[in-house]
Image 1 (cartoon, rainbow over the protein chains, first blue to last red):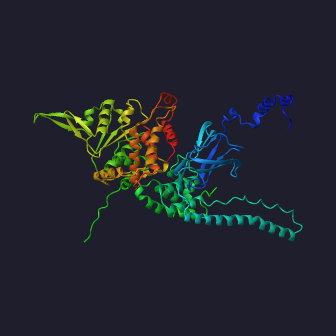
Image 2: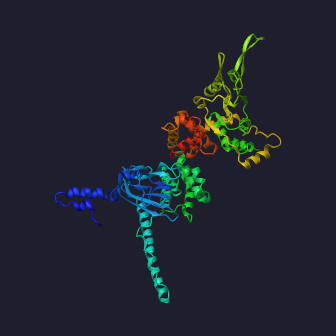
Image 3: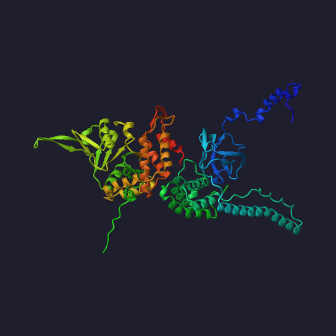
Length: 313
Length: 313
């Protein structure tokens, strides 16, 4: 890259600071986020804007991934003006942002924040907001995601939890090994096929190995199991939050709105589960356990469905 | 020996009977029954010929209480509503002649055609539940429900109800034109002989009992907060709103939500119950400013946007 002519002319040894300052000024518009530019709101069709966690019941200090997903109709390289809620009750370890073109058109932007709660109790994470010009009415708007409630306990892992986690780890390890074996087996098969047919076209490169990430256990399953083990309002709310997230419920939408959607109408298991968990979330305390007992079959049917709605991201 | 068990009628039975008489207009019928249970008065607004009066008559007939209808005209006097004292020449004393307001169900047809002093006489009775005629104060029957109708089209020769008086109506329901299918069914049902009214489907005692049941319906604290937020949102700074709704609206909203839960056979309120009552409770309690009137802004849109801006619990 050619040096900036202004910097080139400054050759005195006594002014490196000035030189650096001028360089920054000259290159600023390219590399430094310019405040005036970020104030210009992008015009976007925001289709979905969700906030979710990979776990809703956890212990103090236990890490969780907070995932923010925004889908817009436009093709964009990055999403500006996203404001995270106050995370003062959490240790924040870092975050990662990326935007990719979506198969259905438009762009999917995802931000994953790694945090850990510092205090016990029900911790509600407020909605993430996005400032943009709404392409539907051309007005500057503030879009907001749903909020998420976490049930944080202080007690250490119980023997059952530990055993369950061990079994999950074992299951996940098997999944990873299996996934890693697939390209190897495919490669072998391809090699054999090419040997049998020497006149065939040049061999196709083997598909890239899947990312060595541990496949997460379906959070809904985990939450339902947790609710079955210990029925309580916070766990009911955690299941409800997860279900609402999966159907892409907006903050202002009620059960009636969700039931009117095609997803719920075409999948009776989903409609039943949404209704049952809604009732359990607002029933009087004395009838909570009964309401959970009534809700569990519907939730289990949903989890067991071959194509559970909004499969884990 | 055969034991006959009397099954107490449910609110849903009343609703079903009304639906069997009135074609369509579900929102109107729901609001009538909900307001009856919530112990409030109703104002229906819609063009002529949309079964406003018929719906009120059907409700009165189905409930089996006393019913009176008053056609409001510009020359109506307060005594025509509440009653008066008449000198009896034979006994040489004054006797009280009770007005049509002494009934369980009073239909105030075209309430905005009478001058303010007549409206005040009625609305005072609605608020106090009692009427003073001469030196004596008389309690109105229990339940006492006023159903008023208004025609928004012919504004000439009408007296608009002040906001303070409209506030005494629990709900304001907009009556809209039926769909084509509904209109065909209206033709089938009402084309020949006059329609049969539902008679004594429930008793006055049942209504009193339902009111007690509704008061015992559980409202989760987050839902109470949601109701407060909805009403408070009308008081936030807004381009088109002069004054927002009062705490009476909050009370009305929760009472209506409880009634809806009871009709649906639940012992607890869900967010849908609160939100379903928001527009009928708020639309006549929000005072638009001159700018809104000058720009001919649809008040329904404003109320709808306020409701949509409040996240559900």
